Length: 474
Image (cartoon, rainbow, N blue to C red; front, side, top):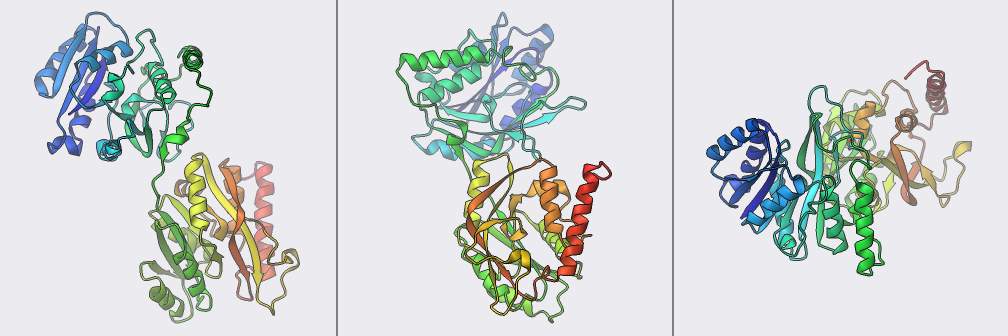
């Protein structure tokens, strides 16, 4: 059985939303997991008490307990825990709700005997006219990983072993409990998916309060005293130590224009990636080779998504591929470049471990056909490794590219340079894998080998940058 504990203090009709979000979980609605929802009326007003009586009559799964006086959320949760019958415990505040797949995400992790607590991210939703809290959210989903009891699922034994909530704390009792978990080295798993929807409405108990108002310094002092008393000298585990990064889908986008001479070699380096969760999208940008390049893609990578567009240039082809992509991360690869086998896995691992980094590059080595004379600014030996900013070196979060509107297809060249400028101007954090994971090939058919075209494109990028600094363009 699952026991869901809800402190109630002067809540309104939003309580129905919270309760229904629990009852609509697939495991509960299909009868797989019995549930009891314990509402603790923590000294509410008469209007809320009347509502609670109606709710108890309406939902057979609801148990109603009452405090005559308001004693705070810690005491309310403890009262609920003393009456709970479930082997699993979860929480929901009366103004929040669970995503429909919360239990589907978390239950499997509690099959592990070494895991006592499983949780996920919190997605914030603001009521009309209510400002969002000042936090470092994922900009696309408004999600964040932090301490919130409504986002977790707990084995009952944790509380049976004395891990109750401190009723002397009016605020941050959840932070104190979280520190206790870490001090006792309880098995914790945190997922990247959201397992709580937090509604911001202006009357939230702890939103926009200062650390002093939340009594956080006192909470930290308590933790230090407990650790000294038990002679704990090692640092506490941090949130990243508990995170279970799933293997997000990476969309690899290859713009194709003719390319029959090199595309098979390039496709082979995609197939050889040690990272397996990849979708390949090849955009044929109006090739003039009677489909020779497309045929090779179909033969050598039959699972690729292959689309054909009128010839509009490489930037437009990349944008088309990004528009078709399903991946959380986007990676670009030119039809004549090659990746080392661990390029994708290395960049995914970095983005997973650093959730506020928007884009990551890698080092490259330059390679050229023997008969080709490189442009003067590229006179490097193949072993001369350096950081690369070309698209083939780049991996970024899909929402980051979408927020910039993609590559600028109005540029004849230099759209990749313009993208890097825009990423930096937008303030997205960046990183580089300091290893040569890209082999960049230079040959007569490179789109940017024509120096006049390259100069024109880069001149336009520099002109725009100058105007930005003068405030003439955004």
